[in-house]
Image (cartoon, rainbow, N blue to C red; front, side):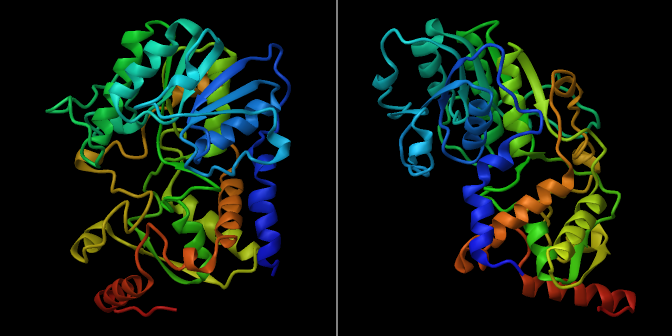
Length: 378
């Protein structure tokens, strides 16, 4: 098996190559783009694809998240300005102009208002990365951008939690649109996945297949899911800028086309090709998992039973974004590159994934399932 040094070379030194879509080319009109953020997960991928198209990038951030990301001499063309959008945006003051701003770090509406008031007269387009979590309900398959949004009981709340995240993002959208009417692009991605993801929500499945053995698979193979490769999202964000698309777009996988069966089977196939131990899927119904206190999404990432109040899960419409230029790389590529990235992580990091059921607990649930069904494991 290829050793860790080779995986590191692919996952880090070659990350910029993984970021480039096959159709990457120089833009007919080079643009000046300001990125608020830019060094986390999505930002670097946007920087890579924008540079490949010949655009000029300025990054504004605190310089605390991955400060070494663009420190190499090869990135001398990427301007980096430091400050804090909450307390000190002086680095962006003056009469400088940009064709577009990409805001990857908006979580509070006051921050968006402050940014748009400072930049509004000096930029042409404001692209805000939001989330499909802004929707008030998820009970209707095929829901599109016109669906009602969450309204927080207290719109002045400033603590970002699981309960306030979606509502605050909705308020961020409104703040941008109020300050720059007709010049705002709102992109609402679903679960963002791929190499570099620090949440491990999608990564759990390629990593689990890589361990081999019996895999606890949730629900049925036909259950829908949705996510978007970070590199496809970055490319679409750039497309909205290059084509001056304004409005609101759900950026996610095609609705109802991606299933848990396809995801897990692809993870198995990729892991096998990368010399992982053999694995076997055991599909366990949602009601049994609930009785065993196995939680959707956290214990079983990227999965929620598509019923009741979640009947629309995995079926958010992305038709508008696809018509505007959103494209997708093969699922196999996303899984492979994610597993390459995961194998490159230090052993201590891989020993403590941030999402997914604990191996010992997984074994307990599988044992209980086989006992109920009168079957045996591998």
